[in-house]
Length: 220
Image (tube, rainbow, N blue to C red):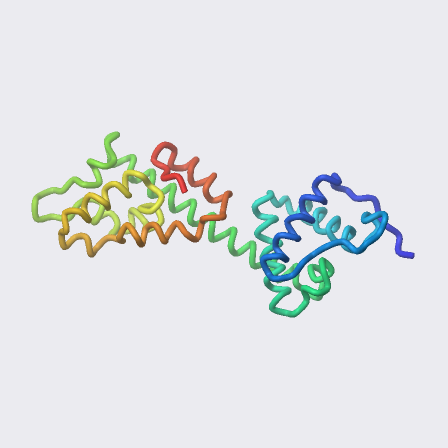
């Protein structure tokens, strides 16, 4: 009989990982459950959940990253026809390595987006004099571009920043009501709303972005 090692993580954490896996498998069209037995801690499913929880601890993943990783592995396993193997699918071939690399790339992209938001926000604060909407709608002359248009075209304000910044959303809405040719140079309010869609379930991004923007944060 295979010797069962004592878990290095709390049982509550293992259960949490198990339920995350159940949810991810359900989204992929597969029901994940323990086999009928008196002691589920002696099942392979429990051992795999334990191993996964320990792996997350080793990698120092927070809850959101762990959930994202599990979803990534489940989708990859579905594509390879491995979901019927239960949680053993997580440890087939190089699945974990492939998905670990994927999540690292995604995290790097997220970090880059957050860094960009901070640069954009610092730029606006330094040019707003405490009145960001007025600053965004200011023009040097009647036939010149609004500042928000000019700053957007010069990449001082990104599309993502326009979508998550309350002052920017207000400024875009006001310009769109004027039906000026400059409207075509800015994303529409619908496009800005769609920009937010990719972060609907990303609590980590929302938390970090909200800290960067403070009271300028547009609640998602």
